[in-house]
Image 1 (cartoon, helix red, strand yellow):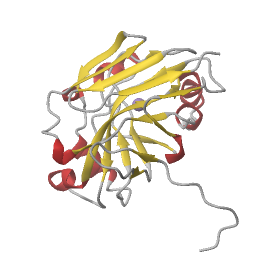
Image 2 (cartoon, rainbow, N blue to C red):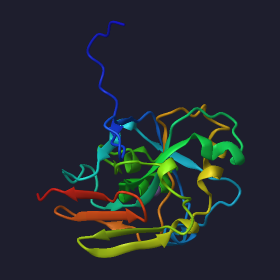
Image 3 (cartoon, rainbow, N blue to C red):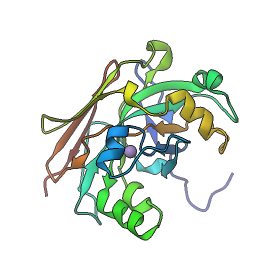
Image 4 (cartoon, rainbow, N blue to C red):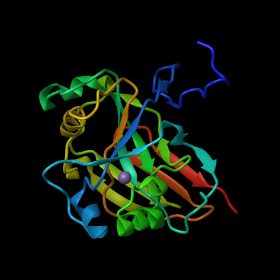
Length: 230
Ligand code: MN
């Protein structure tokens, strides 16, 4: 195939124990998947069905980077999340079969322009400026599902400059990984390379230039992200 100019290389994420990278296809993000976070945002979880927004694959940022405070916001927030990496195709898959397409798991940060997200809510407009942010999907190295026992009871935490801000367990998720994959697969032909950020627990808040975020989930490689001094 001839292209007018060379296409961008795909975004990719390292995999623990592999020299090859995991190429990222799409990034689906689940909204309000922890009741305590929904409450702090002034809302409630929707127990009828999960719902989603997207981040561009080009928004993926490796863990351990230092990046500038983004333009267009004065209220830039962290959201610590479990990322699920898919290694197979799935369409209209049942919850019983859904876990078979999981390649692995990673710590992730759903970085958010909270002020632009609020504009979207106030004006009934999409959230893209609030959520689809360059370097705004920070993803740590993937641990293969085969190398991990189940997710039950794992603690998820985030600290800013060493102070713990978020502290919950994955059991607090309203929709399980299997339920999310099954539900999404009713709307999309899910593919290997798709990733799902599964929502954040309570305790979100702002970061400023020079701040460093350290996130962890029991048994996974931690995520670190730093905003450069300005
Ligand atoms: Mn989120």
